[in-house]
Length: 388
Ligand code: NDP
Ligand code: MG
Image 1 (cartoon, helix red, strand yellow):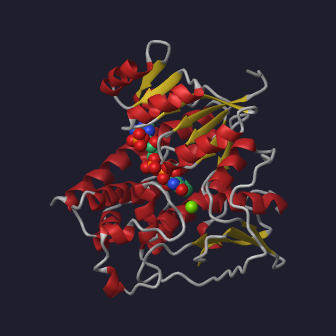
Image 2 (image 1 turned 60 degrees about the vertical axis):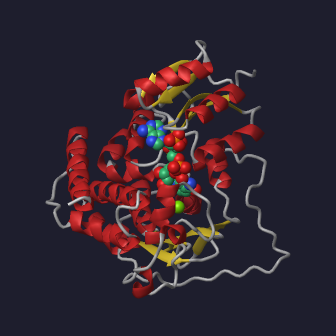
């Protein structure tokens, strides 16, 4: 085992991003060492990852899970529990991959940055909800966010030509591409009959259930507008959504002189994952390579904001600032969970989020306590609307 290997903690190791991160790591064992993992319900998968990569520290959600996992991995492995456990693991490696889904990923984002780590961030919900708090801890010496989300990873690369002055004044706009999801082109009327099977059938990406549903409502793109603004310090008025059904152009940056820079590949999350882990070095294995000898067409169109009101809800939350993005994301988590549990129809997901946002009174977000109080209120309201 070489001591020059970079250590990696992978939190959310059992999910879609987690599994693809492991695929990248399997090819890069000379350069990287997986030292800690965490997950939720899939304990057997956690045990098997620990065995394969000889990981000696694992995070689980509850004491019950700890006891169960201990019987699978034996006494050599240390098992930490809950949000405190996630925080601990987020300080223990050179690179911290946050592949947890939802607000549960918050301790990873905050602790990794507080500890001055390189954060490879897939978990957009934590950044969106806690943007003002994240902005403070990002200035810790050594702290760095590398976005795994494919659009943001593209923008990050396209901004390498920017002056990097605060707010990127030489950038006219960021063009955030969207596949349009499974319901692209559907009328409002047809959308009323959308089923769970329809919504889970994403045309270009295979992802975890929450983000797949978010992609069907375009809430994922709305969240990504907020994510881009928080990551790059570019106000949301300069972040525009462009539907690009092939998911080959992962996003673009237009400079004030009219030049547009883009990053392209076939849709494959292992490319942004490898970029974030390897940066500033590009790892020498091509994921999602484009075969330009085959016919390739790239098309672009405007999103249907009337049929997909999630986009405007996100822009409105950005304009309100404070805890509004945290409310949006929390209400959306509850609505998506209710849809996946067959408690509400697809067409109610975004209208429920909108109803929760109608209750929001401007509240600045100055502390973690503020954030938790707002998150709890938004979730309570949303739950009340699922089961009135
Ligand atoms: P998955 O549902 O596939 O995976 C989520 C992971 O989080 C699982 O490992 C799950 O564990 C774990 N998890 C859930 N709750 C907890 C908790 N309380 N503590 C620790 N671990 C927990 O989601 P994805 O991989 O699709 O998405 C992960 C994040 O990446 C999301 O924020 C998503 O928006 C973002 N993202 C995903 C993309 C994709 O292609 N999938 C693309 C861009 C962004 P378990 O399964 O064991 O319960
Ligand atoms: Mg994305």
